[in-house]
Image 1: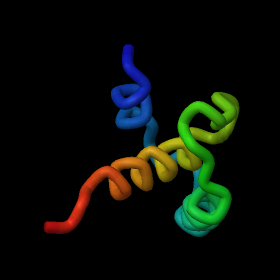
Image 2: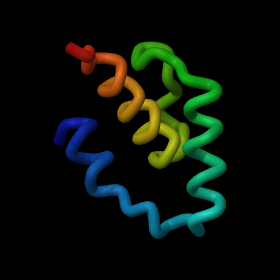
Image 3: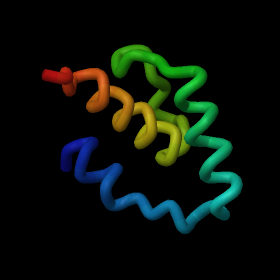
Length: 61
C-alpha cells in the first residue's frame, strides 16, 4: 500500500479539530523534505507536509 493511500485512509477524527489545526500549523512551520521526515510523526503532520509538497509542485501559469 502506498504512503498516499495510507494517508488518505487516516481520519482526522483521531484528534480534536483544535489539536489537528495545531499539528498542521506545526507541520507547515517545521516542514521537512520527504527524505528527512520521521515515519513516526503523527499521520496528520505527515499529511500536511505531503500537501505542502503538492503545493510546491504546482506552478502558476
